[in-house]
Image 1 (tube, helix red, strand yellow):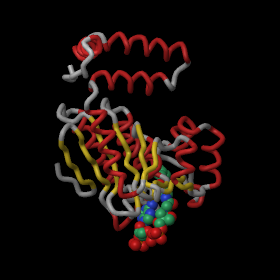
Image 2: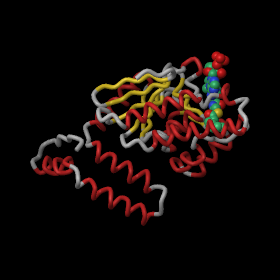
Image 3: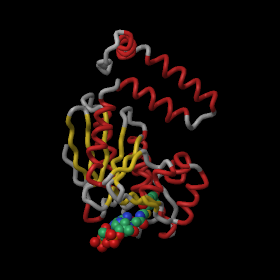
Image 4: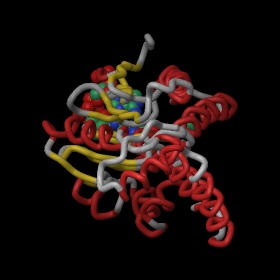
Length: 260
Ligand code: CO8
């Protein structure tokens, strides 16, 4: 697949999507968001892909935000359209039935931080920097930050980041639970690929159930969430992989999942 603003590779069940505007620190413009929607839609429908790694090209940035050059003179109507384009891409990534890992190689600011939060897991380089600096531009996060950030790190710290607009380093992001792991820059892609390979060895349909139960359940009350979990765990028993998993355990061998 050929894109103007993204690089796409696929091998051994793992797709790698790279934001590719290094000259603008991978700033996210309408073309990037449209292409992100297209590539994740194609991935959803590609049975060969079981895990996705999303990263940024160059050494400095995952993405330094939505594109300020494109946004600066937009009217209210233009912004509504832009936000709808962002929402379409973000929802497509967040609801992908396959696990996603953001490998954050540098700045993840504004829309860049928000994009990373659409992924299931975040691994970052020690050089990564995070923040929601929109307040310094006279706006607020508009690519899901006011909603996803408090859900990930709690309301107090989310308000601190959004109101003050300061950047935080990788160690602070880890302590807040914004990222899962911090590694030296040269180890970032190896670590992300190791996690992806491990995920690709699990059952895809069963991982999809886990993701659906968590993503859907977390936005409901506990009783509704537990009902969703009960249905998802029951559906696991409709897979051959569940039979194989339990059989392999009892036969004291490693399960060989077939994604069925
Ligand atoms: N948009 C467009 N271009 C950008 C962006 C961006 N977000 N970030 C960096 N660039 C460009 C710079 O303009 C520069 O271009 P040029 O070489 O043509 O001057 C190039 O990338 C390199 O950047 P710098 O020279 O600034 O690099 P530094 O190493 O000096 O600084 C920083 C790096 C600290 C990351 C700095 O570039 C910076 O502060 N960037 C902007 C960060 C920011 O404010 N991000 C939030 C943007 S707003 C947003 O994301 C809103 C999301 C929701 C939108 C919903 C609709 C409202």
